Amino acid sequence: MLLSAGLAGCTVTDEASMEVAQPLAYSGEQPVDPQPASDRAGIDRLIERHSARYELPADWVRRIVKRESNYRPTAQKNGHLGLMQIKHATARSMGYAGPAAGLLDPEVNLTYGIKYLRGAWLVADRDQARADRYYRNGYYYDAKRKGLLEATGLGKDRTRSSKSRHATDKAP
Image 1 (cartoon, helix red, strand yellow):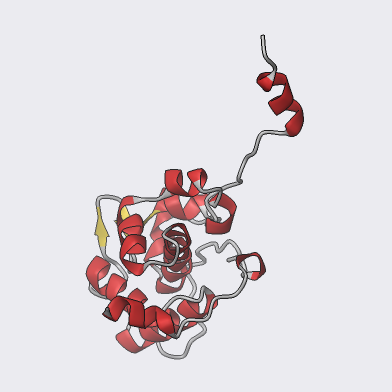
Image 2 (tube, helix red, strand yellow; image 1 turned 180 degrees about the vertical axis):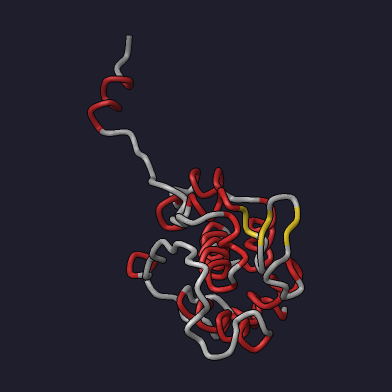
């Protein structure tokens, strides 16, 4: 019941009008924010901003960050990196062009981690519990099956052209 209450106030716009995250390259420079994003307040500000960008409940994103890394930007385990424990290959598939170490930057990690979470949310038909499972276990094949690869940022949806369909649909 509490999970549905978190979505009740969330307004969703047409997915086609959603702003797409531009690829970030890790620069190694200090953030422009006067307070470092590695402190809890700075991380919360980033979560608020990125959650709003992708129209996800910020409290839900905070719970995931707490579970995945306990708010430690430098957390690493089995190839999972940073606050949201995203893999370098996953971030690259979504447009990230920097090195794996760049995902330890809270701004970069939340950019791609929340984008990936948004994809899980779309594939799960906006059901937080299912989206959480997709986030933890992956959702590429489910997104592909539903024709949501482009909407999730994981690739291009491919459909057979009508010309090739007619050629294969002919009776012998």
